[in-house]
Amino acid sequence: QSALTQPASVSGSPGQSITISCTGTSSDVGGYNYVSWYQQHPGKVPKLMIYEVSNRPSGVPDRFSGSKSGNTASLTISGLQAEDEADYYCSSYTTIGTLVFGGGTKVTVL
Amino acid sequence: QVQLQESGPGLVKPSETLSLTCTVSGGPISGYYGYWIRQPAGKGLEWIGRIYTSENINYNPSVESRVTISVDTSKNQFSLRLRSVTAADTAVYYCARDDINIGASAVFWGQGTLVTVSS
Image 1 (tube, chains in turn green, blue):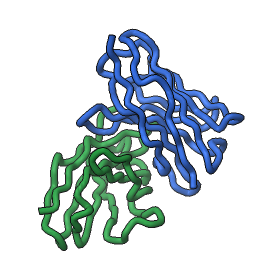
Image 2 (cartoon, chains in turn brown, purple; image 1 turned 90 degrees about the vertical axis):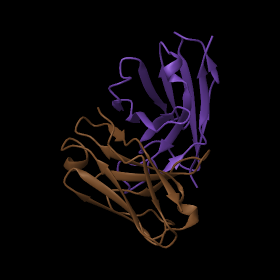
Image 3 (spheres, helix red, strand yellow; image 1 turned 90 degrees about the horizontal axis):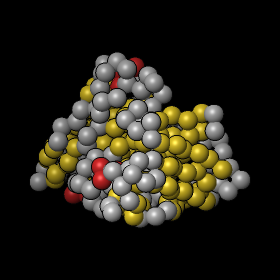
Image 4 (cartoon, one colour; image 1 turned 120 degrees about the horizontal axis):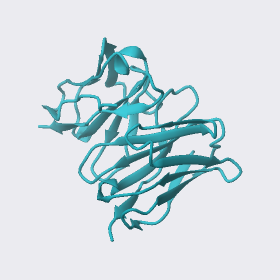
């Protein structure tokens, strides 16, 4: 299985909105509503931010939102804050019953 | 709160078998998916596999020929065995568990354990 495709980096100023894309195929992202997003600060454990495309676990700020169109999922961070600077990974369920991650996107707050 | 803890050797010789155990506390592993995920230094996350029951296991095709994941519900643990390791298997290994009504996601994570493959 091939890794999902994410941009290597995305940046924005505090208060702005940014969007991270996650492109797969009809065998993963496009075929199922099981896309998740994880946030990982340097040296820390990944944290689930979005599940099933657009749902937020309890405790995740509502400025984090997810969506999907075709084979591409997106994570939007509105009102960007300094603490949002981290690596973000998408993942998707696949047609063979596995999960696959994206390569990760480094978010920089300018 | 559910907590997970990985345990096992931090150093494995090339061609030998990497063995890790994940102990779950604060909640059961029975009825949930247990995941193994790894991350080489400076690189991204790689999904290794997941187990629901001994009959319901999924593996990443890239390691499927070398990996075995098992579960011991009596000890509230699940385990990873990766055979014939090489330097490319050097990584931080995480175990994780899903949660009810949260599909196909690693909700609770262990702290991760660094496994180095070297002679």
